[in-house]
Image (cartoon, rainbow, N blue to C red; front, side, top):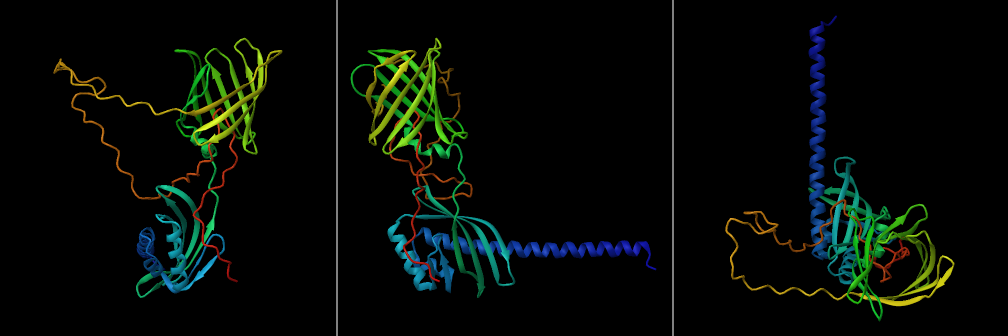
Length: 378
């Protein structure tokens, strides 16, 4: 019968051997990931430099590419042709990569999964899931098969407002009578648009209002809430009918009087839109309608630098708002080439200009960098 000390030593030795095997497997996995990541970096670099001859060297001679629309390209000749055509049709296209997993299937075979991003000028235009099968040949990992799958991005309240992103900025009403100045900006967090309105008569502000625009998950529509400084408020939902937005608005005055109106908004061009109010009722009275044009406000003039003052400031005092000895803020870095991080959200292409005042956008198709037309091979 084995003694207890011997059994203890045997258990410790077995544990050490097991840990050694685990460490060896982990080291082999790390080496595999490093080798395949290096191969993917070479592929991405060649793509971003628009070098089809170099791109196809990442494939086996009989390697294949299966695009998200089912088109199949096999062999380096076909692959070179499709990449050459792609770089011609989409100059400046950049590729980003998020490798999510790499699994060995034997000594010289591995499967890789992740997401590829395509964009131009720092804007992601499309993202696709992919599965790649790689083979190690003569010490180099090569693509035997690369298959792409389109997966729609996860929608958020902020992304559902992206078609209204064109509202951000300054606007002003045209024509005679009262003048309305409008400003829109994104709320912190990016899930709401905030609007401010100032109504001017001559040189005086006669009314101020604040608005919040968001996506209502209960109704699946864009909804707005407007609050006047006198205590009145309004809300409404927007519906797109052909080329016009139609708003059915309900309002409450500061004295409790109810009101309603139908507002139709029609885009004129990218810098102007028309707003027509009809069926306006306040309490038991019908109110005259309106027809106005809203335009982008001209840029504010840049103030000229003032001449040096004759009286110098007291040396012991620092300029207001800047503590003594604090360096000036650094200038913004220049825009870099597209580098797509794993968590970067898709920036949908803005819709054609529509109207402020809470328009409910239609669903805007996501722009993608299209693949060359080709029927799938059987």
